[in-house]
Image 1 (spheres, rainbow, N blue to C red):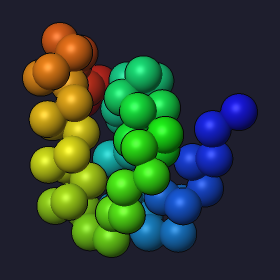
Image 2: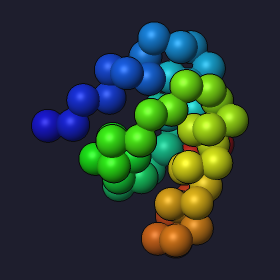
Image 3: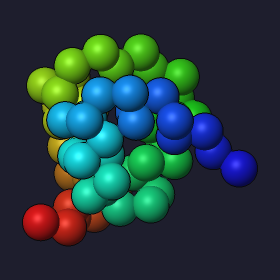
Length: 58
């Protein structure tokens, strides 16, 4: 089971992270990347979604 709790501490990150496709969430958490800002999360997620052809729920 993936630990997504790290994103719940920041409401902006939580809202955006919750809107990501499950596989994108899993890839972010599995990568071990340290994300501290909404901009960093968006950049990382957008890169992964483009690479794997996924779309975020609006």
